[in-house]
Amino acid sequence: MLRVLNGRLFAILLLAGCAAACDDEVITTPITPTLPKTESFAGVVTQNGAQTHNFEVGASGAVVATLKSIGADNTLVVSFALGTWTGTSCSIVLANDAATGGAILNGTMTGIGTLCARVGDVGNVAAGSGAPYTIEVVHP
Image (cartoon, rainbow, N blue to C red; front, side, top):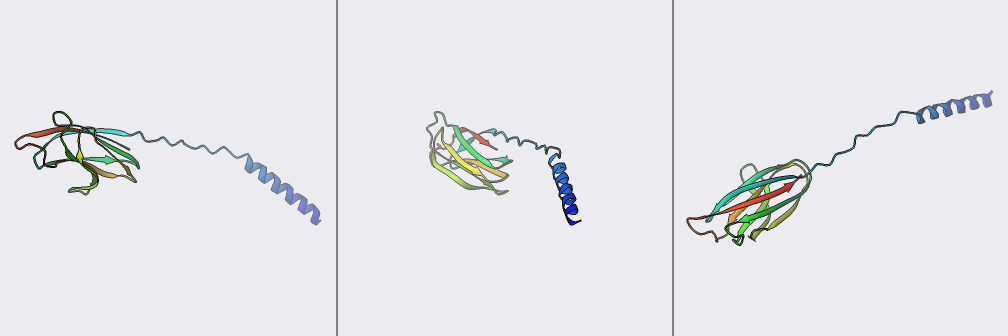
């Protein structure tokens, strides 16, 4: 009798295993990568002045800021920085205090939040005039 029960138990377990193996396929939704966002900012930095631009980062990833142009011929030396917006000011994380046109800052955002890009005079903007600039930021 025990052999018959073991045989039947084996058959039941085998049938249960086969039924489980024939279960419907699990359909997974592919993860679509977030395309980088490009933002441009423009302004004028005055003598002893600075301009800050905030931008929202929606995911982790690379952040690249480029000082596309500064002054009349891209040779004016200024401070160019990237940081975290605190709600009232830009807390600098990366800085180049000798930046000219074409300067690039590379960083990595490890979450979401508000960052800031800043351009400032380091003593080279003439009194009574301003230096126009453009910044391009690429981020997730």
